[in-house]
Structures are given as C-alpha cells and as structure tokens.
Image (cartoon, rainbow, N blue to C red; front, side, top):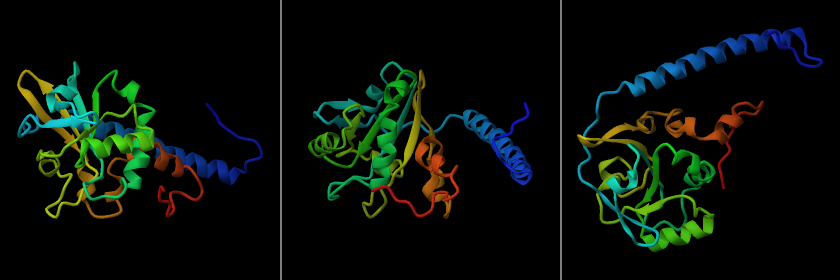
Length: 213
C-alpha cells in the first residue's frame, strides 16, 4: 500500500520510507530475539520454595504465586526497609502494569516483591492506588539476594524474572540481565514492557532527560 499524508514534502516521504525499512528490520530482529528466548534450555531450579507475605500478612510460597498457571513473572520493587519512598522509576513502571494486570493474569502469574514489611507495602499500595497489583514482602527470605535484586551492600535493584513450572519443579527461565551491562543499555532492561519510553521514542524530542516524579 502506498502511503502519503497531507502537505508532506518529497524529502519527508523519502526519509520516512528509509525509516520504515529500518523499523521493519528492527521488528524482524525483535521477533528473532523472542524466538531465541523461547528456545532457551531449562534454567536452574529455584534454590528454595520462597515464602513471601502478602500485604495482609498471608504467607504465600513462590509455588502458590503461580496459581493454576505454568509461568510466573516477579518484579522486584526498589523499596527497602529504610527507604522513605518507593523508587520513582519502579513506580512509573508499575503504574502501567496496574492497568494490564487482569489481562496478564489470564495467561500467566505476576507478582511484585519488595524487601519491606507487609505493613509498609499495604500503606504503599493504598497511597499509589495499587490495589490490583499483587504486592508481597520478601523479608526473611533470600530471594532478592539470590536473584540479583539486592547487592552485597543491601541496595535494592529493579530486576524482573520469569519462572516456569513443570513436573520437574520450578525453574528460572529468564531475567532482565541487561541491567548489568554498561550504559546506555542498563536503564533499558525492561523497555519492551514500558509503554512510556516507547511512546517518547516516537517524538522529535525523544526521551531526553525525563525522570518520572
């Protein structure tokens, strides 16, 4: 299909056509990366059946978080026991996930964990309007340390991990390890899940120095 828009110049159309070719190549590369991801061999079995606590204090094992599904994603929110507020970047990401959670959970499990008490998480949930997000405390577990969401100094890191369940047990499938690569890629480790940044990339200004408040 030939495309043109009102009052555009021939130079614009030629440049846009070149950009479209690059966009199509990027789409093909994205599909190839997804294929390679799906083809990963089985990851390591989880170190233990971690016991988290919901915002109401209910104990939930990592196996419980799967429910009836075979796949579970866990996002580690940067909100440690001494943090005065949740990480603004994490909060912006989770604000977006909040609107998608019912659709996500129709296919897979999703949970947010933080190294903070159930009481603090319940207060944060009410403050942010995150009632639809499944928040869990990782206190008294080694989950955050085991899965690279807490460094040796106790600093919290925003890792996303996907786990798969089978008759063989629960195994790690994928993690957002791009976070540990040098900039500029490090802040973009979960870009594909974050509409805000992808929308900014469509504008003349790009992402700029924007930081969610």
